[in-house]
Image (cartoon, rainbow, N blue to C red; front, side):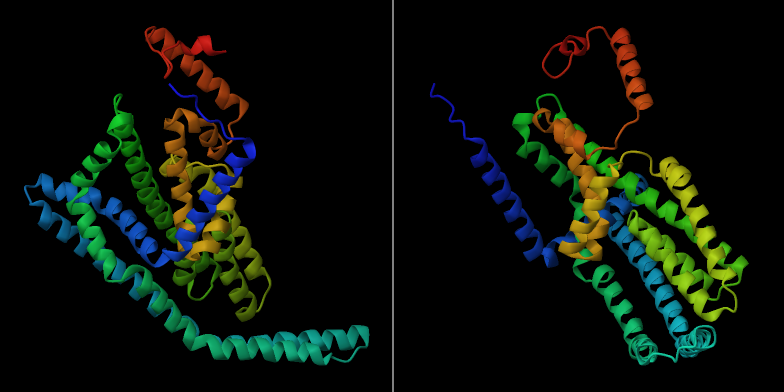
Length: 385
C-alpha cells in the first residue's frame, strides 16, 4: 500500500483559502439563482405541515402541494398589500416632516444666536435644505422601491414553482441524499442529519413567525398607547426586522423614534418609545425566543454577527436573513462528522459552567442507564479522558 502524501501546512492553508474564495465567487455570481431557490426551500418547509395534513385527508400529493402553494401566495400577497398601503399613508406625512425639520433647525439657530451670540452658519442651513430635498425627492420612489423589492423577493414567478416541486418531490430528494452518501449511512447518520436539518429549519421558521406575531401585537399596542401615528406600520416593521439578530431590533426602533421626535411636541415621546422597545426586546431575547424558537439555531454572537455582515456584503438583506439558519445547518453537519466537530464547537453557543456541568451529569446518568453505550470509536466515553 503506497504511503499517504502529507502536504505541508502552508499547502493545506492555500488549498483551504482557494476553496473558500471559489465558494464566495460562486455565491456572488449565482445569487440570482441561489436566493430565490433558498427562499423557496424556506417556504416549502414552512408549508410542509399543511401539505402533510392535506395528504392525511386522502388528497393526492399534487393537489395538496398546489393548495399549499396557493394559500402561501394569498398570505404573502396580503402582507405585501398591507405594507404598500401603510407606506403610501406614511409618505403623505412627508410635507409635515419637512416643516418640522425646518422648525427644528430654526429653533436651533435661534438658540445658538441668543445664548452664544453667533450667527447661524451657512453650512447649517445647507444641511437643512439637503435633508428636506432628500425627503421630497425620495418620498415616491420609497413607495415604488418597497413594492418592487417585495415583488422581486416574494412574487418572482420561479419561487412558487420551486416550492411546488420541492413539496411534490420531497421523498425523491430525501432518497437521493441517502443514495449519494450511502457509504457513510451504515449507522443511519445521513438520515439523522437530514432529519435534524429539517427540524432546525422548521423550528426556526415557524418559531420566528410566532415571535414576529407576538412582537407585532406588543410593538403596535405600545405605540398606540404612547400616541404615535402609524403605530401598526411601525410595529410590524420593527417586528419583521427582528429576523436579523442584533441589528434588526436597533434599525426597527430608530424609525418610530425619529418620526416621533420630528412630529410630536415633546421629547418624552421618543424617550418613551426607546424605553418601551428596550423592555420588549429584553422579553423577546430572554423569554419569547428561547421558549418558542428554542436553542436549535443557537450560534455564538461572534459567529452570528460575522454571518450577518458577510451575508449582507454578498447578498444584501437576503443574505442577512439566510446566513443565520445556514450557519446553524453547517454547525449541525459539523457536529455529526467527527473530523469537523471542533468547527461545530466553534460555531456553537458559548456554554456556561453550569451548562457544561449539567451535560456532564447527563452523560454520566446516560452511561449508568445504558452501560453498553459506546462512542463513535467503539470506546466508552469515560475512557477518552
